[in-house]
Image 1 (tube, protein in one colour):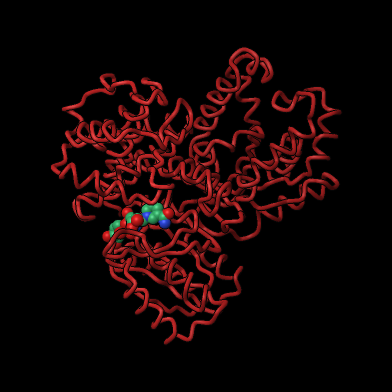
Image 2: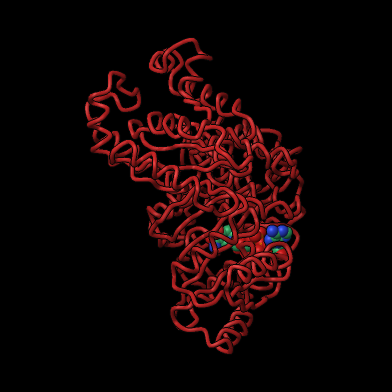
Length: 552
Ligand SMILES: NC(=O)c1ccc[n+]([C@@H]2O[C@H](COP(=O)([O-])OP(=O)(O)OC[C@H]3O[C@@H](n4cnc5c(N)ncnc54)[C@H](O)[C@@H]3O)[C@@H](O)[C@H]2O)c1
């Protein structure tokens, strides 16, 4: 067994960790010491000479150098990472899997007192308002600390050490939780191998008396059946309702039939359902939960990459009509979203690749680290290379893209303003998807073309720096998105653009990438849209760069 002790700077990770290690005859590793040894310099000097980025690179290398955890039952090693190490998803992937993690919870006020007395003022909080800086650190890291077993860190040293030892001896759920956040839009948990324990916890939290699982044949075979077995073994009485697979599930008639099933099962107002599936199942089951008895709680278990990094987050539920997709729906936030990276292993390569278009969108909206991760590992994720899972790259993409969406939605839950950013690449994308009849192209594949269009329109409008547009297109090239020519009717595509829901007073509001974010442009001339649509539909070979775009 190995133990990782996390907490704010000054929470006592080293002091407590050393004593726990001494009591159990285990080794103690202070990661900052390892970094100092490798750099031949003190941490503040590494910050001064290499900047925070240089320090973080060294920190990642030190964590990788720890190697695999020792799985034998007695405690072998106690690891105390620096306070900021666990902010990086890849570090948590390396550190948390296969290890016990304990969080020394100490209030920011206490940390500030302790650091004031410390001879080494920590570089990240040295400044005019150390208290404010520590409070910000605590708030920004809460979702990472909350993955661990909490131990109150303010007490006599011996009793803190006792509490950590008690945590070591307590049974733990299998798998690794990488992020846990209780937010206004539900609890969000990301991890690996956590499905049964987290769904069990989410059901208890809403006082469920049984587990009513709603799924479709594909997700049921890949994920649902095993989850039902595990929940049954944990003592839950299980009911399940299967809807059709794929987009066919998003119909009012299907929701009506499913509501009939819930009535037959005598589902009551406060009873939750658990939606197990991709975006289509989540949208339909979410709408069922939004409307049955005027709204019952639901738990999202997203089983596709689209659903994990996009559709399960944000509370948009709905079904399609003949006239268009998602035309009937409701905002209904889930009680919990349980994202288990392990369930993606069975997903087919086409689904995985297409889903990455949504991750490219979130990167283009201003997440530099997500951009870099996709540039380094996106192609491997798309092809299903096991290395992309093993290295934590897939988990990092899910977390970064998913959390970026959480932040956008928290800022604008009902799409009154900032949430329109999520439409980047979706105006032309939706039109292309509709023109292809919603069956020849996956949603993400269509968004790949839409992102190229937004970048090219952005360059022509002077909103997107050409090098930013090039970077977006290069990444799409590497992921093989929006590359092949499409033989769609141009006028039909342009016609379909006119029913985009992002219209205000008749003008389509284009979301265009800027150097590090987005801008809205409601005045894009129709002839520019036509010209760009022609180029995008011709495929990448025909339009090798954005450089030829005309400025308007
Ligand atoms: N609500 C939102 O905010 C939002 C956002 C984006 C997309 N969407 C919607 O999401 C839908 C697309 O989602 P999707 O791509 O997940 O489609 P999907 O739900 O149809 O799933 C795709 C396929 O994958 C199979 N599958 C599911 N989990 C699997 C697993 N673990 N292993 C193997 N196969 C598995 C399914 O059976 C299905 O055949 C669209 O309807 C779109 O409108 C909604």
